[in-house]
Length: 323
Ligand code: ASP
Image (cartoon, rainbow, N blue to C red; front, top):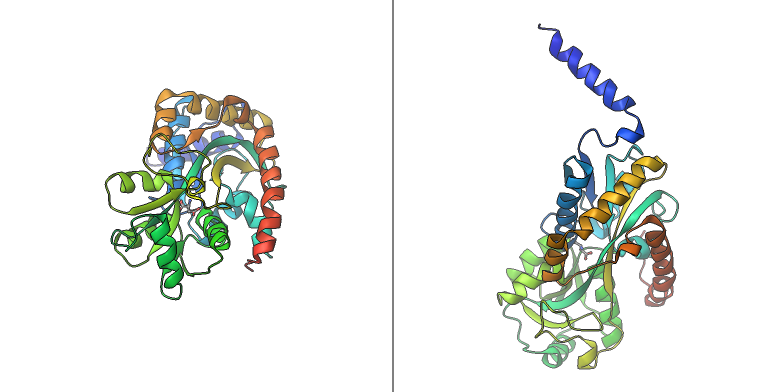
């Protein structure tokens, strides 16, 4: 009897290692998140992971691999076994990172299989609760007058908060001292505590804080207002052009993941996003779920390529690089 347990464990491992791709998944799947827990990407990941567990018939574990700029998780997934048990959720950073980083240990265009697009989320310019400006006009004149003192929080070069900050600073032609975090989750804690002055963060994270009046908001980076925050104006309608950006999310698997496994991941994503609960949860957070014809590998690949081409000249013009 003593020997039975190890024998069973070895047999189970052998069975799962040799399980044909058609039987996938025979155990839990891990979804890697490039930013800190409690932040906007983590929030989207947890909604998707929970909803994909049902069609997959296995738990989807969310694992945060935070790093400034979100460049660690893609590298981990690139180097993971291509068996469908390690997948990646990432956002617009996959399209800006190749231009921002001179040295990158992965290539978004060649090292991954694509699963599909998930949703798009606008950003909000927000400030600590006691920031001395009640609207965008006051905010702009205050930060310009105190440009050597005010601090801008972001999640490192390559993060959406970095891109938004870069566009914003270039639109108002003023640079600020930036304070990098491993995600805007921890940055939000410091904003709430007054340790940093302002940031640009996705509505997936800022909506509840704005609604409860815990932070100040000066505008949205979308072309239109969002239903979940009807009283918040866009930056554009307040006359500030050049800061529009939508943060799109996609799901990836390591290059070489077998076709039947990828097919299962794609159909599970589509079933997850078709759930009314998921769409409502996203809408409540200001996010728009991509239509079904975008929830597939070809659409994500085409979108990624188009976004790399769109952002490269703007980033080069801003002259911001990391090594
Ligand atoms: N979305 C990131 C996060 O979850 C931060 C960013 O992209 O700015 O923390």
